Image (cartoon, rainbow, N blue to C red):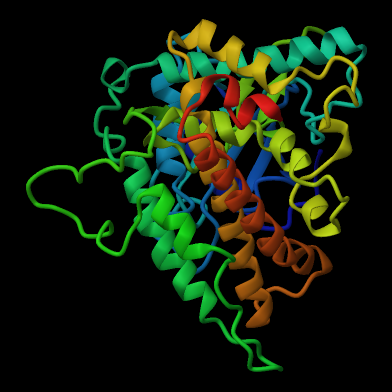
Length: 396
């Protein structure tokens, strides 16, 4: 819900800009701020005719990361996908002039639909609707992955190969830095993730793998999935989707800040997080619950909730290739990445850049998540790298 404006904007200056550049939006405007979109402040604009729009802007002040808060990229991919069968909100304008309201912004269509914050969808009207909602979410993802970047003018949106190698090189550096963070009181370092070196060795990130080559892409590690390059959302999950108010279908995908050209399995593994995190938490570990574990995702626990095998079958039917033979690696890497994110939260807690109970709970999850990632790798290694009936993902 939109409410009190926490990051004020100059509405009068915004109205002048809109009157000149976007005459189809009537002024004056009533501005409220959404509770979500904390990375990029997000506002609801309402015209005199009660027509609603959404404004996304960069946050004020000095930005710590050059890679984050890319509202220009969000606008670019949303605009490019407009003519495709991928449901996205219509864009109206991009303003890169920070002099208008303080930072660059863009305006898009407001989608009047449902957002499920709980991926188990307890508010679904029936088990049948819950199943249909999840099917639409997976089908929508597959449609995104079918879009060829060059067909929509996004051939320069990211590198078409070597996605996982780049991810591994980046996460090695980040995790090593996070491990060195020292607690402000105890003076103890956060420390490495359990099995860190073993995990990177399995994923193909040995000490030499971070060295780039001037003669083309690095050779792909043999354990990795076949190299693919498609448009990816980067944070594809149920609460980043808007569903129709009465029909079980996606009408829009939100929050494209992390989108790029990358490996499609990264998106598929991300939306399946609730299933495999629950499968790794048979003991009711409280830290795993803070990482997203929910008993609702255990097999047979929630009527209408599809099994992971069904999700992959639906995805394959739409995208045109079968992800199942390569999902083991993608699942394990995705859990490792989540553990690294929690380690980052632990580093911020240690240096007192974060102090909330929620942050501390997520920090504790770095250990069981890394252990779970390694257990997935060990299961796969026991199978000799063979998938099919021995697939980790098929057992979730």
